[in-house]
Length: 399
Image (cartoon, one colour):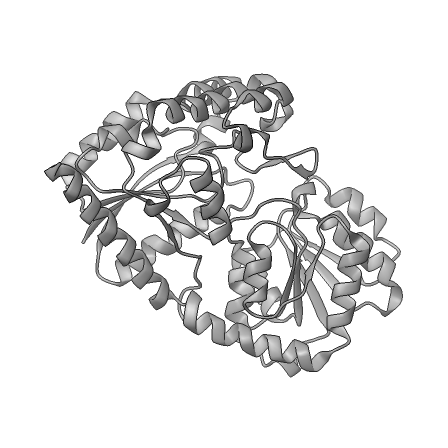
């Protein structure tokens, strides 16, 4: 099968799960013998332009005829069986979808950008679904949801409103990929055709090298951006409440709250900030842990760190928000209220004091990986989605 992947790579200054997913799926498809090309743009190109880059990005976001034309020329030359898009923001834009009529189109929904100008339904540290509930971008303009700026919000809000009105998502995409039933429900309630939304979680490639549970140090890990949306401040406060009897907590990553939280935890003695690590080093840290905590305050997609925890047989606990509880329930992991350090501490402490249950969850994670999150299983799911998109495209041609 000839497959054309489309992706606007996010800036290299911060790790991106979306970028990693695209690279993994590209390599997977090639490993299974498919002819794969990538149409790509890089946000770094805009950032290197300074103020001019910001202006160009704003103009490109709703509609970029130049990217659409370039992609159409590549499609004419390559003649793919599928065009699979991931992120079109800001340099590609949804303008590509109407111009690819006749070629089956698939779009992976890494976030909620199609219906929420901020992409993550969150404002002032709390979940906000005003634009989703009202099917209107007016609240985002009023609050300045994108980068806390009304001016910066205008192009992304225009993007949402324009393509809702044009029917881009109902007319010009044969199949959407969501990571969870929770995400699918929100997107379908917002107007996307439910029958075209397929579920496919992230996967871990190859055979993970697992460390036997009883050979791991007594260590808990968090991996991700150290920002308000990830609930890292709740995690630090939970450890301070737990006190000196708490196991070592290793916090992997960087972000706007790191300096403040590192100062708050400086006298704890059992909280270690490791900074931003490479993908390989992050995976090693996770694999050596006996518990991972995901205290998010926002609607996640399918965090890459959870994929890694399952692959390495690391028990994980999550906040009770978005799709996270369902993922944790599948392996028996603890669930705690979001934005509640006491609740987080109680849940983590209760599990930590039951080592037999921890070890049991570890084994369940390993079994779950083989059944749901391996590369082979994921490839079969992706191929099924491609076949459905091709069948839908052929039906539309006959009509």
